[in-house]
Image 1: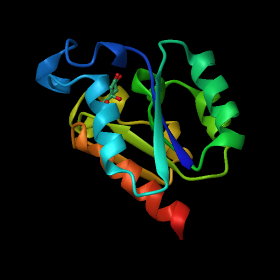
Image 2: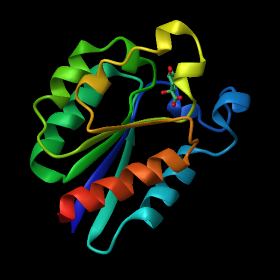
Image 3: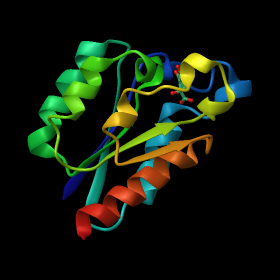
Image 4: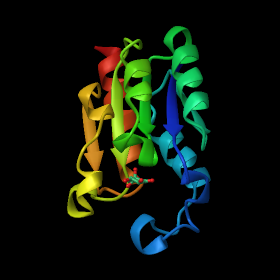
Length: 144
Ligand code: DQA
């Protein structure tokens, strides 16, 4: 089995409860279910969420040896974290960046992403479907 890591940053543990007019009513469990359903045969997903930047960096380091791609929604760390970008630059397989909301329609500080300097693809404003699209893209790239 090839494993795809689905990484979620701060406040995404509250998905479904947090600003549902922006992020919807579905939860991280729904994200996991959608991602598992989007996998091709021979692939599986593992979903993690942390409010702590260092924990996310540790997961990226561990993923270097154990996974075939990362789908990451870094939450607000998208716009602040050189350290997560540096960690992703140590990771060779494909990286897809996902934002539930259409960040370019929101405040100016959300328009810049450090993670986009590394990501192989970026999806914003597709709701939870963006995660599934990220998984499908990694299955495609990892099978090529
Ligand atoms: C987000 C967008 C970020 O700007 C925000 O800080 C989040 C969620 C999204 O999924 O739309 O926490 O990454």
